[in-house]
Image (cartoon, rainbow, N blue to C red; front, side, top):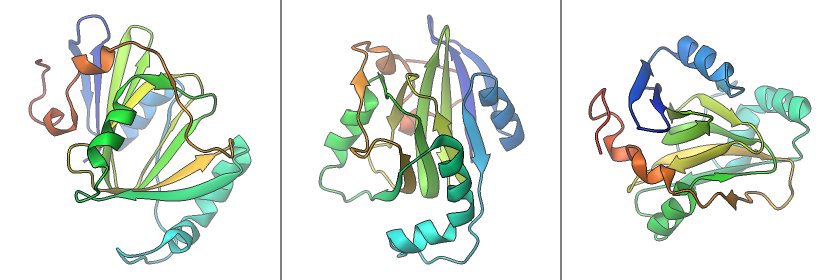
Length: 189
């Protein structure tokens, strides 16, 4: 289930909880974050490779690529048995920004994005069918959990792919990790 929790950045208090996709889209849209639901235009197996996955979402991808000027699209997939899962999780868990939009479409599985905007932190649990677009220079972090299970399409304008500028702020340590996000509807350390 897609879920949005809005917290106070200062004291980590839960301000708002939204579980309806249309309301999540509206709430995030107010702070410049695109959140959409996509459907594949053709059936796809669990073992579908990069070309099959991109082909299944070609119409939606072409629209976004034209809108933002993206140059490349690829597919990243992580499974619970990936040998570098702990190292990769740590890489994404620190607050950072990018010089371009960070766009992820969840073909399968789920992942938790946190977006830090002003005095609020938006925690968004994305699942299969969700597209999230975090604007350039927006503070955020991503938690894929201890046992990651997702397949995402990534879009880039930078040919180098994922390039982060870390803020040095340890704010990400103050918010629920992937494994605790659904535990309760309040916040506790």
